[in-house]
Image (cartoon, rainbow, N blue to C red; front, side, top):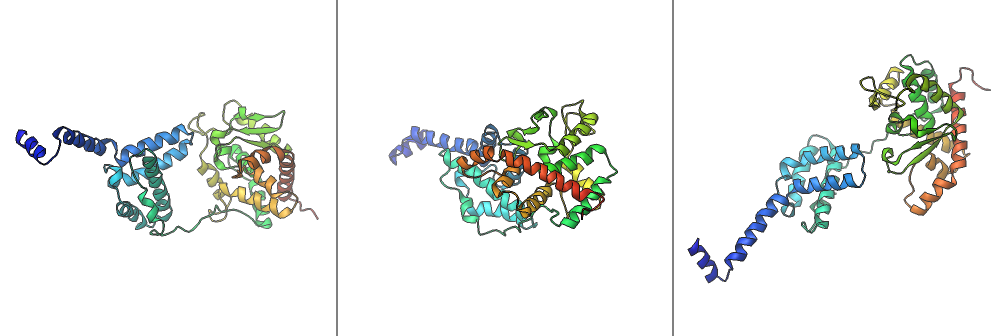
Length: 333
């Protein structure tokens, strides 16, 4: 060790500084790995209020990359190394997973760049190197006659009453499946005729107010006799503290004789949007507000939430009447 130190001095190298540099390099290989920054990135997402489902999806995606990238210093990972990881999933035909995996890996690198550890995001060069997935839309009923068939089948549904009510409310509210499945009784103001959906359950993390039509109120009163004893509108069979799963609604759709290619629980938003826009009675902005779609412009977003409430109430009443008419066994002339 003495001789080695003298050789370094003879070559103009400070042994103390060299030892410190070696410590820094070793630290970089333990604390500056991809896995460490993935953990920090997920912790940041959690602090920013991202939903539990979102965090779980990102955790799952990052686990796919850990075998190849986890122990590597993040500032030494090159584009070709990431590409090798992505190609493994692409070879399985999981094109949408690859797209999301690349985006999530990219987010970790951008966090490392912002932290002053990595210099660049190597995934940027890979955008055109991977097979682009074909866009898939939620199956939805957009034909009036087919919607009539569905609503009449639903009216005769022989399964659990709570499931039938859930589907009917889901259609009237044009909500996302998670919003209706996890709905709680204390979110409903029956005097003001409004359902106040909290921000943490909304996709864009912004609270949403849903007007309650007479039809919706009647369904809620019926449901209150069945589940009003608990906190959730639709508790699962296994636990009153947990809501029914999205699979419960989709299985009910299959029991009604409608395949997954025809309709999914998420597709009712498309169904509502199609008929609301076709009728020509409502402005596009009001329909978007009813669907809780957020305008990218913050000022317009704030304005729309306030300005279209009356119109949204009218839309709720119109949609309920339209659904009731189609569901009626006697066609109007």
